[in-house]
Image 1 (tube, helix red, strand yellow):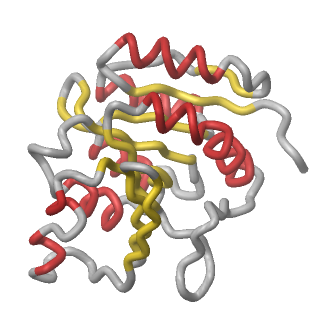
Image 2 (cartoon, one colour):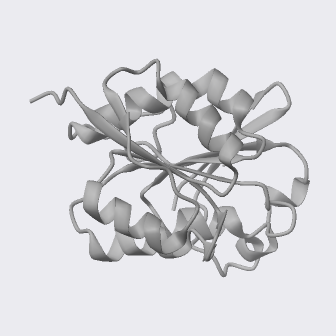
Length: 196
């Protein structure tokens, strides 16, 4: 049965980003916001209570980072599979973030590096469609099916810094093995599909 109403939440400490995402989501009349938050504990409580189908979350938020939110969903909310768009402005200082996100948190569907506005302008309708499909029990296919079927999580980032693509954690084998990497160059961005 098709759902007619969906919920989303924005977890971000920059209120300008809250407003920007909220304004973009207003064109999707079937989507209703859960109160945005910049607080780790409040975010977990809001997700637990409202179970939004779409989560926009920044890595750095008041009270820490969003890993505890992702862990809570993964470990404590069995059967709950939101579409998570994860973003950060700390990629340069913490190049291990993509490996941690994709190796430990399979619920993350999109990984964006700030600034995110161009990526949202170009791709938000696709993200919303995929979130609706997932909420209705259909695994979204972002056009990049992994070997063996199914959609692989992806991240989109500027090409620099180059060590982001071949981070030492992967090279030393500490992260889950990356079976395949497919690059699609689009302008000054590269999209990498990580299959674990």
